[in-house]
Length: 193
Image (tube, rainbow, N blue to C red):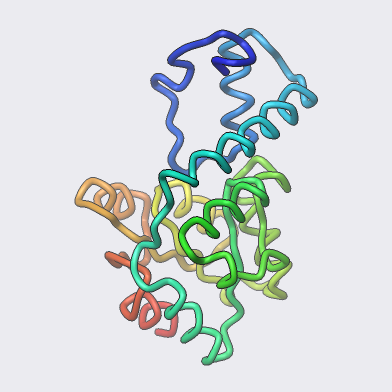
């Protein structure tokens, strides 16, 4: 936004956690006076992905617990593991690869912020791509109240991952079925229960 529109502090007061990339870009463009311009959104997302690729070279993402082990355990039990994220597909790939998890997930089994803007639509699409069409077959794992609400919107069970007390309170208030501190054995146990 600074480079393309000369705007500083465009994210001030904007809640990023749990939002979708396209919705965030749309909100930022509105702050710059650009309304309903899908081409401008696409251009800014391309710029964002290039910037993100540079950022992770010096500031990598970290998994919250032994994610790769948890995914492997679930798959060994016959659970289909997908991705439902507000990140556009390439942004998700960059972030997960940065965290050492690029090979852990099948990017064909997911819903992404480039597929839809509403979180519930992304979760529904991810479930469909995983071959899970009934809500009782879907467990959403997320770290924000928006993840909980998206899971609830499709009738899924939701397990929150709380990184701190504030996040735990937010997940509880949103109605998560269970809350764990990391994506490890406790998460696997909750999913399988």
